[in-house]
Image (cartoon, rainbow over all chains, first blue to last red; front, side):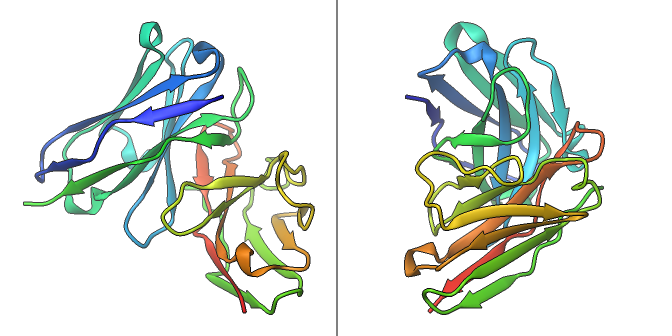
Length: 121
Length: 108
């Protein structure tokens, strides 16, 4: 079955960067896009962007343009999301979420367990 | 930037029908998707492509669209349906995703 295993919690300081990982199994990695979604404490879901696991092309929400980079390593079926210039309001749970259908994208249907990132001085 | 608008809360008694709306200018051309999220859990897809139900989702969940509005209907809502519900779609270019602000469904 589809499994998305995310890296562990991070505690970091304002201005720093963080790199999150999402290791996948149970399906053909390169056939599916991967979304990244975050949720601040007590707040709603926020779509951050998407990566084509095959070619590596990305689309980022305007809010995060210039501050996030999504990459993938097909040899280990893993996607990564690096965010820089962290601020306290980047404190959130970050989810990777696999697209529902292969080779196109619309919405995810399989989610990782989430990674809590705390940004605090 | 593109936005999807949902009511913050909807409340019904058990057995009643709950309707949660989501409005967005691109919805006439782009699919709506709906997620259920219970406290401390990852979201679960309950409706895809406007009105299709994934396997394992109870039949009481249905979706519809009309113009710029998508609606999630929970017919005969049960206490276990209490959760936050989010709509999701893409902007008119299809390049960027977006979630609505979420609706808290209370069943009591």
